[in-house]
Length: 522
Image (cartoon, rainbow, N blue to C red; front, side):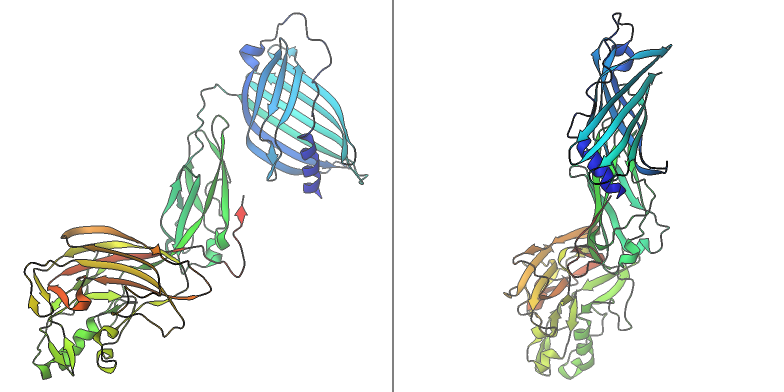
């Protein structure tokens, strides 16, 4: 009821003449009041609104921390006052004008004014309005009493009180209303595993976005505590260091008011979620957790190669090594001599590769096709946007096409990401069609033939060839290979690729269910 009252009241106030004049008296004949020198200008201060019911009960109805009131000269001893962007309780109520306010010097350097009028809007409300204000010592104090408010069809009387106290601005105040830094309080439980990377501040669009782990839960995102900095001299609501709810696609609005009163609204939200692979965990068989590798094929060569005269006893092509942070995955193309095991060809060089999916070395025998050993992709219920991480690379020197040495050809590493549509979980792409199938929805790939000695960031931005449909089933494959053409048995011995800190960034936020839509939180 209170909110409806205020909405009706101030909506009407903003569409009619609030005050026809502050006084009907004639202005003094002798202009002794220093309007231009001391009074006219912009004032900035706090504004409080309260609702007073019959019986005297007062209820706060809104506060504006940095309200601007502009005072202009109306006459030698009179001024106009304008309250711009007047709002409270989330309601934008426009502008209030107090025109031709007669000033009276009540004591040395103190200038007061009063005004009264009535409002009677048929079918909406009736009210008695009074204003009283004082200019002194570079400050403005203003009280607005809107008394005997009667809504149509309601016999209860209300009073709305507006109290303002502000200081005159110098004119040199900054107009900057920016958020200059934005982080999250690391003392909040699980925040280190929830928020990934640094929030992105976009001054042009007045937005701050951040990415969270795809394992984040809505209840954790509902208590994140942002801490941020704003332009010098500016103020902000809500304040820094106060917990906010970013779950279920909610957008939190921060209102930044510059030193000169310029107002900017900043929208802060989760832009997406992310899967993280840091390669700190390795299985007992020597593979990075969550990834399939060609190690199984080399294990088969080691186990059964003797019957074909193959005696490889070197390291596995995929193994752990020192990373950018902690451990990394090392992928190396190795000399497996070539030949045939149980009717299945063994390449001269086995390219070091790993991918999201499964590797079944026996598929080469059971399905009669070595390319079918690689089952690329995992079921994926998100829309991937990009794959990022760090890599180093050293190309090998002896390049073989099949079993033939080609001294004129150089090797290159390959980093790929592929999203494709499937009818069921058993359907998969393999080495024959992973780059060419008409089921591919989005793909990104980069290659590098150069020696990269320092950890270097890579970014695979998926290019969508078809529209993403969340009602369909998809599989997603990320593929790393020390030899770009290794699947065709073309690779250089010793080509080595290091991979670390891989992230998959997905579109959307955490916690949306069914037809739930994003919600804006002020």
